[in-house]
Image 1 (tube, rainbow, N blue to C red):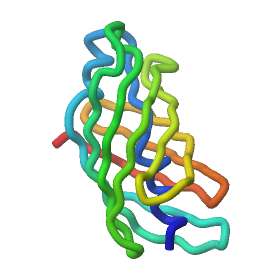
Image 2 (image 1 turned 180 degrees about the vertical axis):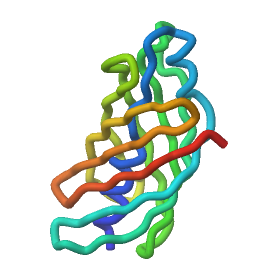
Image 3 (image 1 turned 135 degrees about the vertical axis):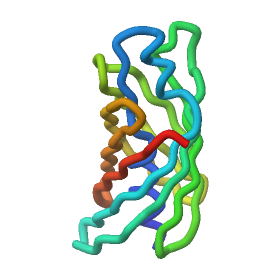
Image 4 (image 1 turned 90 degrees about the vertical axis):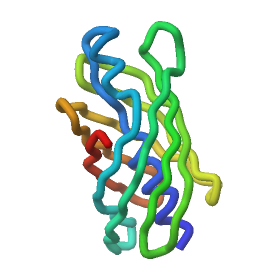
Length: 132
């Protein structure tokens, strides 16, 4: 299904959290984790992802991300941009190379893990990622 990659993509573009430039840098690097994608049809599927965050600007308030995710529908790539919104929260947009769909992501950072919640017109998803 092409719907799963789009939802997972939005999910992975999670937002990180930071209250200072040093904390903001903590989202940088490689992360991996698992979660679920729920389509508007009611179908729920597990998803696993590997994500890499890099600086998007010199101020350290925006980040780019590249992810590879796997679900029952197959493996797909996701990319996007997130911006810091609060001390421990980020918001952004995700895109998939395999799908023309985009999604929104909200991330909450807690130490060496963060939760990404993704949504688009096909469904929602949530994944918890840990530093690799």
